[in-house]
Image (cartoon, rainbow, N blue to C red; front, side, top):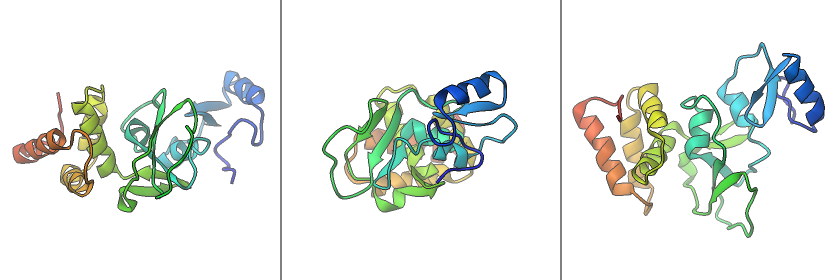
Length: 188
């Protein structure tokens, strides 16, 4: 399905035509796609721009989901995706994608513009775990914590339902500490 405000190379216009339109100021980049320069970048447009990376059995996660939810200004260099179907995949999807082959629980993702994206709470839980693994995602964690009241509690609940995942204990301790302080806004 093509969107009126999203141009993907090869759909209606070629990559060369889109780059020329960008140089003319008619379109701007949104992920790996383009949108009219005067359109508002929404989570729907950001999610739809990721359609080349995902199918129905895959969900966008971690930094990529944070970008879709507006907790990042720019998309990550490598998009993070995770299997949401019970069937394992045999081969890597794309070199520009970091694929996790552990099945994502059904309630951990939501459909946005035809693309499955982890919920803001699950995204926060994943990013706090990544923070404790040494990834530089403190800004995204801060932005998600500030995005709406109660998201830290929702992230704790998501982690408790997550089963066995890496860095779960320190992530739960981190989120519970923020809840105990009544300060869900700063990680640094």
